[in-house]
Amino acid sequence: MSRRQVGEQATFAPDIFEYVYLARPDSVLDGISVYRSRMAMGDALADEVQRVLAENNLTVDVVIPVRSTHDPIIIKFTPTILVSLSGT
Image (tube, rainbow, N blue to C red; front, side, top):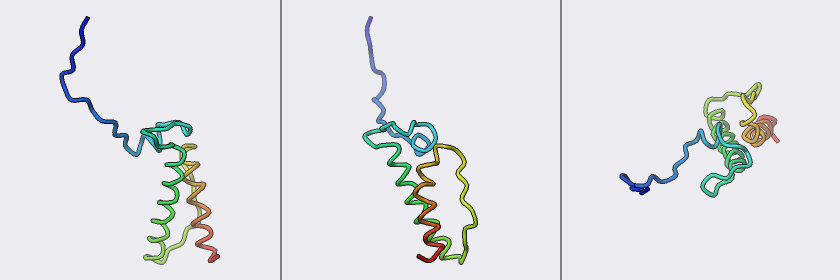
């Protein structure tokens, strides 16, 4: 039995779907905690939504997470938006 590599070894390059949809929350991908990356995505999403809302003079009525994988994102996103909307 022999083994031969015919192409260059690919580098690990997960896309956003690995972190948001596919990986378990307790997973670590390439040294990065999936749960913490989801929390960071919630922070980034909240910052972006606040910017867009302010630019367009809009408000948010409700935030609805779609899947349980979004829970960490919503945990970070919702309080930021609600605090921002309440003016405190």
